[in-house]
Length: 89
Image 1: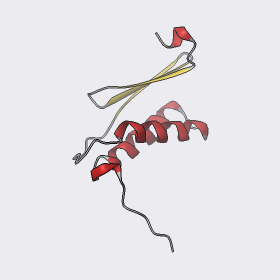
Image 2: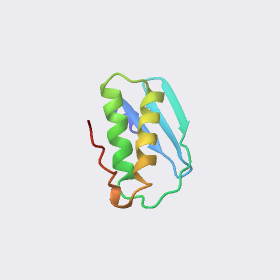
Image 3: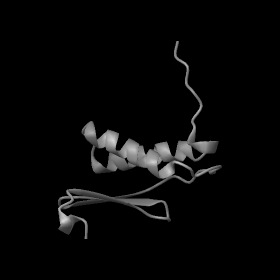
C-alpha cells in the first residue's frame, strides 16, 4: 500500500517480534531476540532511530533491522526508556 503511494522503503514491526523491511524489490524479515521487558516506553522510537541511523550510514536492510531490534531490546529492559549513562575514560 505505502509503496504504491510513492514510499521507497517501508518497515513493518509485528507483535510477534518479527520486523519486515521492503525496499524496491527487496524484502527482508528478521526475528528479534526475546528479552525480559520492564517497560516498553520508547521501544518503537528507539527501533526507528537505530534503523534509520544504520540505513543512513549505508547498512543493508537486514543489518538496519538488527540495529533497530537490538536498541529496542536494550531500552525495554530499563524503566522510562532511559538507558544508564556510559562514562568514558
